Image (cartoon, rainbow, N blue to C red; front, side, top):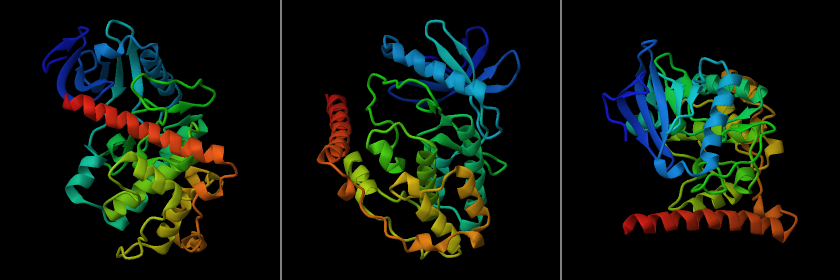
Length: 319
């Protein structure tokens, strides 16, 4: 465990701990060569025996080489020493999760432009074959300029890359409250999966909670497949065009969503031009219209497996 004040690799001075997780630790540091603040990701020793851990690092660096956008502070360096580590650009601001925890929700006149800018950044990534697959408040920083900066490309997909499974992770990659139905079914995710996640995020920012919540991941994932979120009609000052954009982004079948993040951004910026018919279109439960029992089994079997993994981890923590 690195301590505050430690100079790591004779270059990076640890300033603060930003987070701890099952995968590793994240630190705020100062690059003593440039004087700039950076973020360092260092895996736990227990993870180093898994070859896929390093592959995760390599993927983040490869993505960093592809992307050059002001709202995407990606990995800029990797060290193969023991332990290996990543160095990322530092995004000034507060986590969107903290902002929402403090304020509950944000006013519609602030939200539309902010999320449209986020969609611009995602469209930039998508055009380069990079799909984030885990857009959520914890992975976004609200910067002083009002832009949302996209963090953590650890489970991002690069077009054409092999499927990688990390020890200790469910095969269902993502966060249940923001996970698109096709990801719940076990698909790898795509641009339209990110659009769905942004729809969930926009709903959350405006209402104070994600469109689907529950006591466990299985319940939440089931709702994505079968339930309709509560209407946002009661939110004062929310343009019907914004509500229609959210409805279109949250369509269960990905072919019914926006073809690109850019299209959704346009509707958020010009809600008077949005197609309001999406407000009234029924969205039949996905599981009910799957053609074979085998596909239903994949959905519920995958969700059940995720719930079992989480339950096992909880039991281990209680020992």
